[in-house]
Length: 131
Image (cartoon, rainbow, N blue to C red; front, side, top):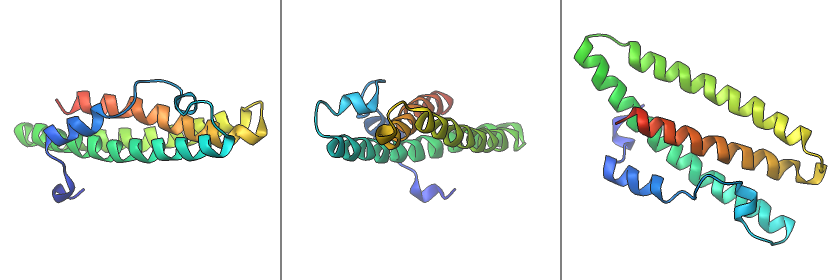
């Protein structure tokens, strides 16, 4: 991943702390129409995806620094394998959440809310790994 796309750590902190608290993203949207909840959840998901990208970049820098100090490449490789596995888990798990939702019309919102919730958790984990 190119280092030029990295945000400085203070900027990363501002982006990450701007994320809402760990809650159900659909409930954070308030009591509005189904269409407005869908839009709200989609916007939340976009913000989390941006934070996830930045947190992964920061964790990659830290992993590379650790590998450089140890003369190896295991940390970076392990992080990338971990991220790939996590992305697959999120896709399958959230697909299940959507398909198992008791109200078929809300399945898309449930799936996106799942992506956001798991994304927030992964951001927190990646930030811890980059410190």
